[in-house]
Amino acid sequence: MYSGKDHTFAVCAYKENPYLEQTIQSLKDQSVKSQIILSTSTPNEYLKEICKKHNIPMVVNPKPHLAGDDWNYAYSQAKTPLVTLAHQDDIYEKDFLKVTLEYINKRKKSDVIMAFTDYYELKQGKRVNTNKLLKIKRIINWPLSVPFFRKSRFIRRRTLSVGCAICCPAATYVKKNAGENIFDTTFKNSCDYMTWVTLANRKGSFLYIPKLMLGHRIYAESATTKNLEENIRKKEDFQIMCQFWPKPIARFINNLYAKSEKSNVV
Image (cartoon, rainbow, N blue to C red; front, side):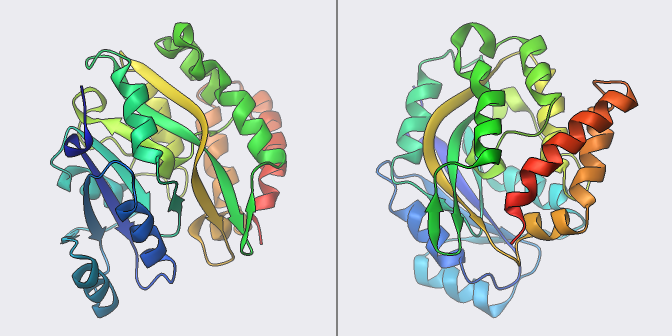
């Protein structure tokens, strides 16, 4: 049975994000306590002061490149069997880890690759529990909440063939089953999507937890919003979808999914 001592929140921080301290506080307020580290490729006094204030160790990626490289470094610095990569602007519900551990512990240790929760959006200071994009993602992820389907490579790949519905900061990895250096290092934005596709081919389970355990912040300066505005995400998602479909079908599905993501543009 896994417990809080078997888990690390690795906070991925970049420059001087104004929401970082709120994220850290939500991790410290977890009903089940675990380790917290901060990983960055942009060390500065702002980050040092926050780490000092909250008594959190800071690790610095010596070879930064794209997001996937930073995530792999943060992942490697977590010395526990389980790790969650917390993004610097999101808020974790106090029972996030408690619920995640409960779901993982219902399965065999050799079985779970990753578990991920549902989430809500934080937009312009307001909580948004549902919108068009969130509804679509919940429909896509639903099969992975069914025990019979969780271990199926076919079902995992089918859910991923129509879009990236897994919220990256809501995912917790069982490192011995997921492997090392799991994150894609070729895509600028869709490195998480490509990572899920790769992990979906492994033996084991994806656990979808249909509970709103994380608040994903949407704001103009976020990397997600910027990449959507610059059309980077749509282009990269199309490349990934072409692994599942002929190009005309992939383009059609990608265009539909991209329209639903417009709610992420502030």
